[in-house]
Length: 265
Picture (cartoon, rainbow, N blue to C red):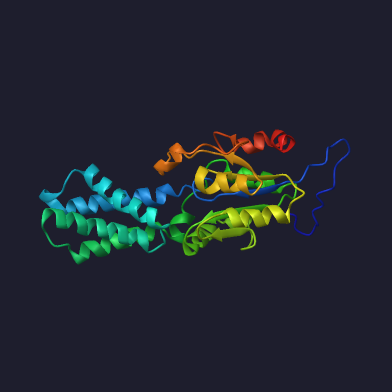
């Protein structure tokens, strides 16, 4: 960005106010990139293959999709899906439906379904996609005054690093020191960040009340809620926002309201 010139955050032109530094942590999935499409497109393709495989025994397409989603959600309740889990969900759904209609599953179909699920979570797939509208501009803007900026994300580290490479997230989070993948809960990581930058106002941007905003509030961050287009986790609809949460309709509003956010903290 500032090749050959050391960036000085305290520099200001005549008549220009010095920018107040602040700590920022952002979620990844459905905040910066749309992860639901990873599964959605693959699920549609799998439903079509299963319908063709079952032929006249096939239930309605919506019943197949609901059956698949039921197994997917049951896995999510047990643990967060790892890369090999989603392809297995597609195969398991096909086997379950075959059992319901009284036929043996076809290994060729199983292989097709596994490949569909596996390719949905790949670096090549992410390279073809764009970040959520406004996300790139917002991240560039947040970094401009030399603010500490971190991505704190849950999930399979293999998949998250493929997203880091595919979406070229190194532009904003250059190393594993800024791109933080946690296995279960973000609270401990957010507490460490808050203690490290205890003199700065701190903000956490996310789409999940349960996994982003509540731990952020507990760690001493101001929570910024940018709701996803669709809430796929039904439990999210029954959870109240933490006190002091700022609700925005889109991530680009951070740039538009940046000065007000800093002053309000």
